Length: 339
Ligand SMILES: Nc1nc2c(ncn2[C@@H]2O[C@H](COP(=O)(O)OP(=O)(O)OP(=O)(O)O)[C@@H](O)[C@H]2O)c(=O)[nH]1
Ligand SMILES: [Mg+2]
Image 1 (tube, rainbow, N blue to C red):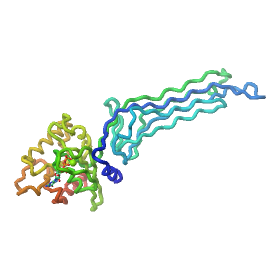
Image 2 (cartoon, rainbow, N blue to C red):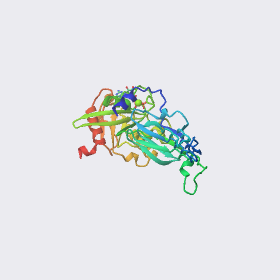
Image 3 (tube, helix red, strand yellow):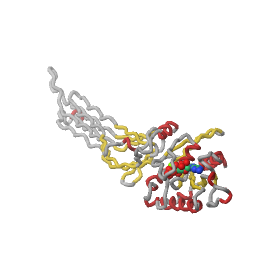
Protein backbone atom coordinates (compact mmCIF):
# COMPACT_ATOMS: atom_id res chain seq x y z
CA UNK A 1 0.00 0.00 0.00
CA UNK A 2 2.91 2.33 0.79
CA UNK A 3 4.28 2.01 -2.75
CA UNK A 4 0.81 2.64 -4.12
CA UNK A 5 0.50 5.85 -2.15
CA UNK A 6 3.96 7.08 -3.17
CA UNK A 7 3.07 6.26 -6.75
CA UNK A 8 -0.32 7.98 -6.58
CA UNK A 9 1.07 11.15 -5.10
CA UNK A 10 3.46 11.60 -8.02
CA UNK A 11 0.65 11.44 -10.57
CA UNK A 12 -0.42 14.85 -11.80
CA UNK A 13 -4.05 15.97 -11.49
CA UNK A 14 -4.35 16.58 -15.21
CA UNK A 15 -3.62 12.97 -16.11
CA UNK A 16 -6.84 11.20 -17.00
CA UNK A 17 -8.04 8.78 -14.37
CA UNK A 18 -9.82 5.85 -15.96
CA UNK A 19 -11.98 3.88 -13.58
CA UNK A 20 -14.35 2.15 -16.00
CA UNK A 21 -13.70 0.21 -19.17
CA UNK A 22 -15.47 -2.25 -21.41
CA UNK A 23 -13.06 -4.71 -23.00
CA UNK A 24 -13.45 -7.74 -25.27
CA UNK A 25 -11.39 -10.76 -24.23
CA UNK A 26 -10.85 -13.70 -26.55
CA UNK A 27 -9.08 -16.86 -25.43
CA UNK A 28 -6.51 -18.33 -27.83
CA UNK A 29 -7.69 -20.97 -30.27
CA UNK A 30 -6.59 -24.55 -29.68
CA UNK A 31 -4.16 -25.96 -32.29
CA UNK A 32 -5.50 -28.55 -34.72
CA UNK A 33 -4.53 -32.17 -34.33
CA UNK A 34 -2.35 -33.67 -37.06
CA UNK A 35 -2.92 -36.59 -39.37
CA UNK A 36 0.35 -38.25 -40.27
CA UNK A 37 1.88 -41.72 -40.67
CA UNK A 38 5.33 -42.87 -39.79
CA UNK A 39 7.27 -43.40 -43.00
CA UNK A 40 10.77 -44.72 -42.56
CA UNK A 41 13.04 -47.13 -44.34
CA UNK A 42 12.77 -50.65 -42.93
CA UNK A 43 9.72 -49.77 -40.85
CA UNK A 44 6.76 -51.18 -42.72
CA UNK A 45 3.34 -49.93 -41.62
CA UNK A 46 4.83 -47.42 -39.23
CA UNK A 47 1.35 -46.49 -38.03
CA UNK A 48 -0.27 -43.17 -37.27
CA UNK A 49 1.97 -40.58 -35.59
CA UNK A 50 0.01 -37.28 -35.81
CA UNK A 51 0.34 -35.33 -32.54
CA UNK A 52 -2.31 -33.34 -30.67
CA UNK A 53 -2.65 -29.58 -31.02
CA UNK A 54 -1.65 -27.33 -28.11
CA UNK A 55 -4.33 -25.59 -26.05
CA UNK A 56 -5.01 -21.88 -26.58
CA UNK A 57 -3.73 -19.34 -24.04
CA UNK A 58 -6.06 -17.97 -21.38
CA UNK A 59 -6.33 -14.32 -20.33
CA UNK A 60 -5.88 -13.44 -16.66
CA UNK A 61 -6.34 -10.23 -14.73
CA UNK A 62 -3.89 -9.61 -11.92
CA UNK A 63 -4.54 -7.04 -9.20
CA UNK A 64 -1.46 -4.94 -8.65
CA UNK A 65 -0.96 -2.41 -5.85
CA UNK A 66 1.24 -0.22 -8.06
CA UNK A 67 -1.38 0.23 -10.76
CA UNK A 68 -3.29 3.45 -10.34
CA UNK A 69 -6.22 3.02 -12.72
CA UNK A 70 -7.40 1.11 -15.76
CA UNK A 71 -5.50 3.21 -18.29
CA UNK A 72 -2.97 0.41 -18.84
CA UNK A 73 -5.70 -1.47 -20.73
CA UNK A 74 -5.27 0.51 -23.92
CA UNK A 75 -6.77 -1.89 -26.43
CA UNK A 76 -10.50 -2.46 -26.87
CA UNK A 77 -9.78 -6.15 -27.37
CA UNK A 78 -7.23 -8.67 -26.06
CA UNK A 79 -6.62 -12.07 -27.53
CA UNK A 80 -4.80 -15.02 -25.98
CA UNK A 81 -2.08 -16.80 -27.98
CA UNK A 82 -3.24 -19.64 -30.22
CA UNK A 83 -2.03 -23.18 -29.56
CA UNK A 84 0.29 -24.72 -32.16
CA UNK A 85 -0.84 -27.45 -34.54
CA UNK A 86 0.24 -30.98 -33.81
CA UNK A 87 2.96 -32.42 -36.04
CA UNK A 88 4.10 -35.78 -37.33
CA UNK A 89 6.42 -38.06 -35.31
CA UNK A 90 3.98 -37.74 -32.39
CA UNK A 91 4.95 -34.14 -31.79
CA UNK A 92 2.31 -32.24 -29.86
CA UNK A 93 1.81 -28.55 -30.62
CA UNK A 94 3.00 -26.00 -28.06
CA UNK A 95 0.32 -24.51 -25.75
CA UNK A 96 -0.47 -20.82 -26.33
CA UNK A 97 1.02 -18.61 -23.60
CA UNK A 98 -1.38 -17.19 -21.03
CA UNK A 99 -1.77 -13.43 -21.18
CA UNK A 100 -1.71 -11.52 -17.88
CA UNK A 101 -3.10 -7.99 -17.68
CA UNK A 102 -2.52 -5.91 -14.57
CA UNK A 103 -5.40 -3.96 -13.07
CA UNK A 104 -5.55 -1.88 -9.88
CA UNK A 105 -6.55 -3.47 -6.58
CA UNK A 106 -10.29 -2.87 -6.17
CA UNK A 107 -11.26 -3.71 -9.76
CA UNK A 108 -14.70 -5.27 -10.03
CA UNK A 109 -15.31 -7.47 -13.07
CA UNK A 110 -18.84 -7.58 -14.47
CA UNK A 111 -20.48 -9.28 -17.41
CA UNK A 112 -23.43 -7.24 -18.64
CA UNK A 113 -23.93 -5.85 -15.15
CA UNK A 114 -23.65 -9.29 -13.49
CA UNK A 115 -20.94 -9.50 -10.87
CA UNK A 116 -18.10 -11.92 -11.66
CA UNK A 117 -15.19 -11.01 -9.43
CA UNK A 118 -13.96 -8.41 -6.97
CA UNK A 119 -10.17 -8.18 -7.11
CA UNK A 120 -9.71 -6.63 -3.70
CA UNK A 121 -6.33 -7.99 -2.66
CA UNK A 122 -2.87 -7.45 -4.07
CA UNK A 123 -1.63 -10.12 -6.53
CA UNK A 124 -5.09 -11.68 -6.78
CA UNK A 125 -5.62 -13.39 -10.15
CA UNK A 126 -8.82 -13.96 -12.08
CA UNK A 127 -9.13 -15.91 -15.32
CA UNK A 128 -11.44 -13.94 -17.61
CA UNK A 129 -11.42 -16.30 -20.59
CA UNK A 130 -9.98 -19.76 -21.13
CA UNK A 131 -8.25 -20.81 -24.28
CA UNK A 132 -9.70 -23.45 -26.60
CA UNK A 133 -8.68 -27.11 -26.34
CA UNK A 134 -6.16 -28.55 -28.73
CA UNK A 135 -7.51 -31.01 -31.30
CA UNK A 136 -6.52 -34.69 -31.26
CA UNK A 137 -4.01 -36.04 -33.74
CA UNK A 138 -4.68 -39.29 -35.59
CA UNK A 139 -2.23 -41.21 -33.39
CA UNK A 140 -4.64 -40.83 -30.48
CA UNK A 141 -7.36 -42.63 -32.46
CA UNK A 142 -5.32 -45.79 -32.92
CA UNK A 143 -7.30 -48.78 -31.70
CA UNK A 144 -7.56 -52.50 -32.34
CA UNK A 145 -10.47 -51.87 -34.67
CA UNK A 146 -8.80 -49.05 -36.57
CA UNK A 147 -5.07 -49.60 -37.07
CA UNK A 148 -4.68 -46.69 -39.51
CA UNK A 149 -6.98 -43.83 -38.52
CA UNK A 150 -6.73 -40.82 -40.83
CA UNK A 151 -8.97 -38.50 -38.92
CA UNK A 152 -7.97 -35.78 -36.50
CA UNK A 153 -9.99 -33.07 -34.70
CA UNK A 154 -9.55 -29.34 -35.14
CA UNK A 155 -8.75 -27.20 -32.12
CA UNK A 156 -11.71 -25.49 -30.46
CA UNK A 157 -12.17 -21.74 -30.21
CA UNK A 158 -11.33 -19.94 -26.98
CA UNK A 159 -14.01 -18.26 -24.84
CA UNK A 160 -15.05 -14.78 -25.90
CA UNK A 161 -16.50 -12.25 -23.47
CA UNK A 162 -17.13 -8.54 -23.38
CA UNK A 163 -16.63 -7.52 -19.77
CA UNK A 164 -16.94 -4.30 -17.82
CA UNK A 165 -14.11 -3.45 -15.45
CA UNK A 166 -14.97 -0.97 -12.73
CA UNK A 167 -12.49 0.37 -10.22
CA UNK A 168 -13.80 0.91 -6.71
CA UNK A 169 -10.96 2.27 -4.66
CA UNK A 170 -10.19 0.48 -1.44
CA UNK A 171 -9.83 2.74 1.55
CA UNK A 172 -10.95 2.60 5.18
CA UNK A 173 -12.21 6.15 5.40
CA UNK A 174 -13.65 8.44 2.72
CA UNK A 175 -13.60 12.24 2.80
CA UNK A 176 -16.76 13.73 1.33
CA UNK A 177 -17.55 17.40 1.04
CA UNK A 178 -18.43 20.24 -1.26
CA UNK A 179 -15.68 21.72 -3.44
CA UNK A 180 -13.23 23.92 -1.53
CA UNK A 181 -14.26 22.54 1.87
CA UNK A 182 -10.62 21.64 2.52
CA UNK A 183 -10.62 17.87 1.98
CA UNK A 184 -7.24 17.80 0.26
CA UNK A 185 -5.75 20.15 2.85
CA UNK A 186 -6.86 17.73 5.56
CA UNK A 187 -5.48 14.71 3.72
CA UNK A 188 -2.12 16.47 3.46
CA UNK A 189 -2.25 17.28 7.17
CA UNK A 190 -2.94 13.74 8.35
CA UNK A 191 -1.19 11.51 5.82
CA UNK A 192 1.74 11.18 3.45
CA UNK A 193 -0.37 11.97 0.35
CA UNK A 194 0.17 15.30 -1.38
CA UNK A 195 -2.97 16.15 -3.37
CA UNK A 196 -3.09 19.60 -4.92
CA UNK A 197 -4.69 22.35 -2.81
CA UNK A 198 -5.99 25.57 -4.33
CA UNK A 199 -8.64 28.20 -3.68
CA UNK A 200 -10.91 27.23 -6.54
CA UNK A 201 -13.54 24.48 -6.77
CA UNK A 202 -12.73 21.12 -8.34
CA UNK A 203 -9.00 21.31 -7.71
CA UNK A 204 -9.09 17.58 -7.10
CA UNK A 205 -10.10 15.75 -10.26
CA UNK A 206 -9.08 12.21 -9.30
CA UNK A 207 -9.33 10.17 -6.12
CA UNK A 208 -6.24 10.25 -3.87
CA UNK A 209 -5.38 7.83 -1.12
CA UNK A 210 -3.25 8.74 1.87
CA UNK A 211 -1.98 6.43 4.59
CA UNK A 212 -2.41 7.66 8.14
CA UNK A 213 0.20 6.13 10.43
CA UNK A 214 -0.52 5.28 14.08
CA UNK A 215 2.12 4.08 16.51
CA UNK A 216 0.27 3.01 19.63
CA UNK A 217 -0.67 0.35 18.65
CA UNK A 218 1.01 0.41 15.23
CA UNK A 219 -1.65 0.61 12.51
CA UNK A 220 -2.24 2.20 9.16
CA UNK A 221 -5.52 3.62 7.93
CA UNK A 222 -6.15 4.41 4.26
CA UNK A 223 -8.07 7.65 3.71
CA UNK A 224 -9.54 8.53 0.30
CA UNK A 225 -10.04 12.09 -0.94
CA UNK A 226 -12.50 12.28 -3.83
CA UNK A 227 -13.45 15.27 -6.00
CA UNK A 228 -15.95 17.65 -4.40
CA UNK A 229 -19.67 16.86 -4.56
CA UNK A 230 -22.32 19.36 -5.52
CA UNK A 231 -26.09 19.17 -5.01
CA UNK A 232 -27.37 16.74 -7.65
CA UNK A 233 -24.12 14.74 -7.66
CA UNK A 234 -26.14 11.53 -7.56
CA UNK A 235 -27.68 12.55 -10.90
CA UNK A 236 -24.20 12.94 -12.32
CA UNK A 237 -23.92 16.68 -11.77
CA UNK A 238 -20.39 17.98 -11.35
CA UNK A 239 -17.80 15.24 -10.97
CA UNK A 240 -19.58 13.61 -8.09
CA UNK A 241 -21.36 10.55 -9.39
CA UNK A 242 -18.41 9.10 -11.21
CA UNK A 243 -16.36 9.21 -8.04
CA UNK A 244 -18.91 8.24 -5.42
CA UNK A 245 -18.15 4.62 -6.19
CA UNK A 246 -14.70 5.17 -4.71
CA UNK A 247 -16.14 5.68 -1.24
CA UNK A 248 -18.70 2.88 -1.45
CA UNK A 249 -16.36 0.42 0.23
CA UNK A 250 -15.18 2.73 3.02
CA UNK A 251 -15.88 1.56 6.53
CA UNK A 252 -16.38 5.11 7.73
CA UNK A 253 -16.99 8.54 6.24
CA UNK A 254 -15.86 12.02 7.19
CA UNK A 255 -18.18 14.81 6.12
CA UNK A 256 -15.83 17.74 5.59
CA UNK A 257 -17.73 21.00 6.01
CA UNK A 258 -16.47 24.53 5.58
CA UNK A 259 -17.35 25.86 9.04
CA UNK A 260 -16.97 29.46 7.84
CA UNK A 261 -19.74 29.08 5.23
CA UNK A 262 -23.18 30.64 5.74
CA UNK A 263 -25.01 27.45 6.64
CA UNK A 264 -22.63 24.59 7.50
CA UNK A 265 -25.46 22.55 9.01
CA UNK A 266 -27.33 22.62 5.70
CA UNK A 267 -24.16 21.51 3.87
CA UNK A 268 -23.99 18.46 6.08
CA UNK A 269 -27.58 17.43 5.41
CA UNK A 270 -27.20 18.07 1.68
CA UNK A 271 -24.16 15.82 1.58
CA UNK A 272 -25.99 13.08 3.45
CA UNK A 273 -28.89 13.40 1.06
CA UNK A 274 -26.58 13.04 -1.97
CA UNK A 275 -24.99 9.90 -0.57
CA UNK A 276 -28.33 8.33 0.26
CA UNK A 277 -29.67 9.11 -3.22
CA UNK A 278 -26.61 7.52 -4.77
CA UNK A 279 -26.82 4.34 -2.73
CA UNK A 280 -29.34 3.43 -0.08
CA UNK A 281 -27.67 2.98 3.31
CA UNK A 282 -24.49 4.88 2.39
CA UNK A 283 -25.43 7.84 4.57
CA UNK A 284 -25.92 5.48 7.52
CA UNK A 285 -22.28 4.36 7.50
CA UNK A 286 -20.34 5.20 10.67
CA UNK A 287 -19.35 8.81 10.19
CA UNK A 288 -18.10 12.00 11.78
CA UNK A 289 -18.44 15.63 10.78
CA UNK A 290 -15.21 17.55 10.31
CA UNK A 291 -15.90 21.26 10.66
CA UNK A 292 -12.88 22.68 8.85
CA UNK A 293 -11.52 26.25 8.68
CA UNK A 294 -12.33 27.08 12.31
CA UNK A 295 -9.46 29.58 12.18
CA UNK A 296 -11.86 31.80 10.22
CA UNK A 297 -14.53 31.68 12.95
CA UNK A 298 -14.81 34.23 15.75
CA UNK A 299 -16.55 31.80 18.06
CA UNK A 300 -16.44 28.05 17.50
CA UNK A 301 -19.17 27.52 20.10
CA UNK A 302 -21.70 29.20 17.80
CA UNK A 303 -21.18 26.42 15.29
CA UNK A 304 -24.28 24.27 14.84
CA UNK A 305 -24.08 21.04 12.91
CA UNK A 306 -25.95 17.75 12.73
CA UNK A 307 -26.40 15.97 16.05
CA UNK A 308 -26.49 12.42 14.71
CA UNK A 309 -22.73 11.89 14.61
CA UNK A 310 -19.62 13.21 16.38
CA UNK A 311 -18.27 16.60 15.34
CA UNK A 312 -14.59 17.46 15.16
CA UNK A 313 -13.76 21.15 14.71
CA UNK A 314 -10.37 21.60 13.02
CA UNK A 315 -8.27 23.82 10.84
CA UNK A 316 -6.47 21.76 8.24
CA UNK A 317 -4.41 24.73 7.15
CA UNK A 318 -3.19 25.65 10.64
CA UNK A 319 -3.01 22.08 11.93
CA UNK A 320 -5.44 22.90 14.74
CA UNK A 321 -7.12 19.91 16.50
CA UNK A 322 -5.57 17.44 14.06
CA UNK A 323 -4.75 15.07 16.95
CA UNK A 324 -8.42 14.89 17.79
CA UNK A 325 -9.27 14.21 14.16
CA UNK A 326 -6.73 11.37 14.07
CA UNK A 327 -8.45 9.75 17.06
CA UNK A 328 -11.83 10.06 15.36
CA UNK A 329 -10.44 8.43 12.20
CA UNK A 330 -8.96 5.58 14.18
CA UNK A 331 -12.22 5.03 15.98
CA UNK A 332 -14.14 4.88 12.69
CA UNK A 333 -11.64 2.63 10.97
CA UNK A 334 -10.95 0.24 13.82
CA UNK A 335 -13.90 0.26 16.22
CA UNK A 336 -12.68 -3.02 17.77
CA UNK A 337 -9.70 -1.19 19.30
CA UNK A 338 -12.02 1.10 21.20
CA UNK A 339 -14.75 -1.39 22.10
N1 LIG B 1 -8.46 29.49 6.36
C1 LIG B 1 -8.43 28.24 6.03
N2 LIG B 1 -8.38 27.89 4.75
C2 LIG B 1 -8.34 26.56 4.43
C3 LIG B 1 -8.37 25.56 5.41
N3 LIG B 1 -8.34 24.37 4.80
C4 LIG B 1 -8.29 24.62 3.48
N4 LIG B 1 -8.29 25.93 3.26
C5 LIG B 1 -8.23 26.61 1.95
O1 LIG B 1 -9.39 26.28 1.20
C6 LIG B 1 -9.07 26.18 -0.18
C7 LIG B 1 -9.54 24.84 -0.71
O2 LIG B 1 -8.81 23.82 -0.10
P1 LIG B 1 -8.71 22.36 -0.73
O3 LIG B 1 -8.02 21.51 0.26
O4 LIG B 1 -8.15 22.41 -2.11
O5 LIG B 1 -10.24 22.00 -0.79
P2 LIG B 1 -10.93 20.70 -1.41
O6 LIG B 1 -12.10 20.37 -0.58
O7 LIG B 1 -9.93 19.63 -1.59
O8 LIG B 1 -11.42 21.26 -2.81
P3 LIG B 1 -11.76 20.47 -4.15
O9 LIG B 1 -10.61 19.57 -4.44
O10 LIG B 1 -11.88 21.53 -5.16
O11 LIG B 1 -13.03 19.74 -3.92
C8 LIG B 1 -7.57 26.38 -0.29
O12 LIG B 1 -7.30 27.69 -0.66
C9 LIG B 1 -7.06 26.09 1.10
O13 LIG B 1 -5.88 26.80 1.42
C10 LIG B 1 -8.42 25.97 6.79
O14 LIG B 1 -8.44 25.18 7.72
N5 LIG B 1 -8.46 27.31 7.01
MG1 LIG C 1 -9.24 18.72 -3.26
